[in-house]
Length: 332
Image (cartoon, rainbow, N blue to C red; front, side, top):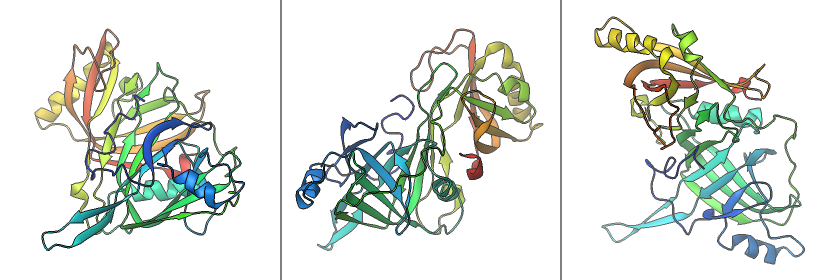
């Protein structure tokens, strides 16, 4: 999966235990959901006669509420025991990484995008990941208490690719609990909430460079790291550079911007990244970018950050991004 590369979600978080409740055997399930339960599903089915043990769906929910969408993948969530110098044990849950697309409910996006904003004293939220079989019968439920969003992984966007757009996130809970379930049937969210977006339908607009940024053909995948701790200062937020590929004839304005920045004559700019419907006629997702400045320009690139070949006659522009603010109401 070249949109979210191995390690994108794990670089700034503790190592995920392979003994976790959700793991990584990579079995391809009928609904496109991947998860390794390390035998957990089979044991759950043994306790629930008549229930198909094959996990076909990973649902996401808030405790006491209906499901708010189907995850494309999840791993982590085990309990880690670390020996202390005093001879005792420190108990902590491993982070959980989740992958999802735009086919989640607005309730999910309002929570997720709100949690992904960098503010001081952001409280964690109790969330649940539920494994269900092909009949949508619940097999197990992993509850993450006071979970905070520690990382957000953006997919690679490219006009030459029709892959499904996937987002990723790392959740760091204060505690976790796991329970087998009795085979109750889950209520699926409205299947008509959205059509799956593909990574080739997007538009980028940068203040003062609207015409040039509209010619961007590729935005490399990048990770935004947040502090998962209560009371953390927003200055602890970091982000990879926003790497853009565009035709070289459209790069002159970025060179001018960089020269002005070096001379102290230009300020940071703002921008907006929009995800578009398949017919490119309507906006189905939007993120606002602020604190944009030119970090570097590669005039003779041969490959992008993920190793993909760059189109001949293209220039790569790397931008610093100080803040990203999502518009949850636009995701539908």
